[in-house]
Image 1 (cartoon, rainbow, N blue to C red):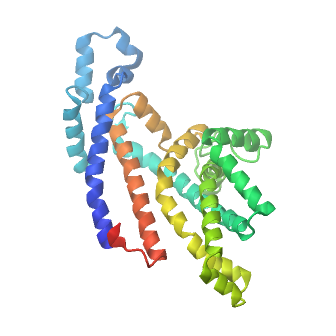
Image 2 (image 1 turned 90 degrees about the horizontal axis):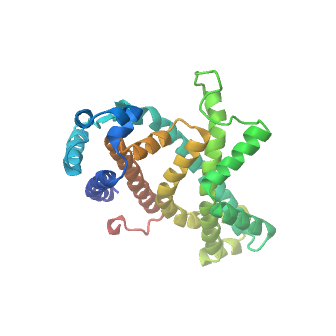
Image 3 (image 1 turned 120 degrees about the vertical axis):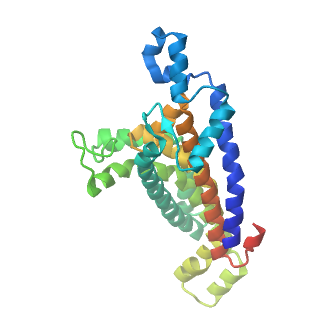
Length: 322
């Protein structure tokens, strides 16, 4: 595991270099002007000399390769730069918002894994039964539904029609106090929607994996020895059926991040979604590069975690071959 982690870290360095370079190249080719985005309506009456001086102050003059190299060397030294759009240090922008995005993603992902495993196990227990058909049909419907559509539907039903949960934000209207109970109430809708968007994949994978395990000779032998059905399902079939799910964890991280951005926008969750949108539309080079690097690192860590878990649960896997 240590060798695998070391190899992945060595592989991650050039990947992050290429990604950050691509961010600056794409941003440089963008039609958006960061100087005008920063100045707003004041840029309409400003002369070219003033705009050039503002570009120098913002650090957006010169070729993009020079800006990329300056940002990279500063980032390696711990300075992620200054965000002209948010008017804050990039590290502060991310630090204030990352914890809430991480909380949303962690709760939603854990709920999706647990609920998907339970539903997949129930469906695989009796193939072709009403339960199996209901779980499969629901999974395909949720799989096809856009996450923002599910978010708007949940917002209308639970917040507007029933008034059971807050419509958005982190605190109640007129209050700035962040409490545990209030956070859980405001987290319920966005985390539930994000979990629903990930649930179908886990339910279908567990259903297929457990169904295949039930047809294997070791599981049939366990049934022939008179073991209880619960023991056969949980102790034998589920253990084998969960192995494909472990490989799914890493591949779902990119969509989880994308879905979280949409969910945060709909529910006004104080995560990194708003900062990401503003950084992209205003061509905020330092913030855009930092957020993209963070998302890329999350994907790489997710894939590494999936491989490590697969090696822990299946001793037949040789981690040196990964």
